[in-house]
Length: 212
Image (cartoon, rainbow, N blue to C red):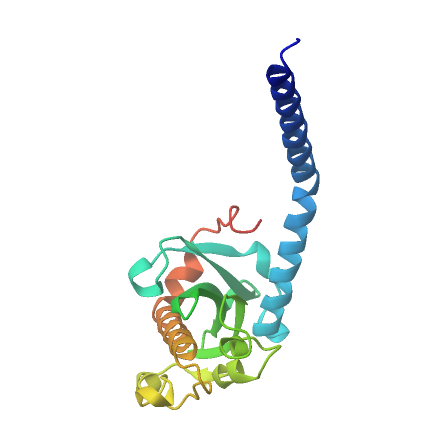
């Protein structure tokens, strides 16, 4: 192996193989822990938006998948978590998206009870502008609390818009696109759950892929 180019090439190839193997090993070693952390974070959010009084089951274990791309704006099946008391459905939490945020899709979760009320909303993930669009995070402002315990009735539907569009919800100073997209997503998901509560509650529970 006197050719320096071949020798250096082999060294680089071996180095790349070792690095790839190390990354794969670490990924496998940490996968279970990462999944546990995701599940714990998910449970924490679910407990925030579905009061303890409304369920005696493990919310993360009672999950089904919802596929309604035209209504919910996602081409992927979305996880819905069924809250029950003595086996009877009392509330559903649905992970959904606002596909038209200022910087892309905003992932959020809403919870609706069996009395056609929107219990609460939380933002799960977003890329909105810090200081402007990030007020959709409860850690930044209490704006999302507007939706807490809102009745989901047709008479209120037109008011579920930002004030700039004739509704009653505040837009952010200097940022209308983010709250507009967010409110639209909350409205669509809320009325969808209200109209399909019983059907979703009866669906088979199969969220293995989304529970990770």
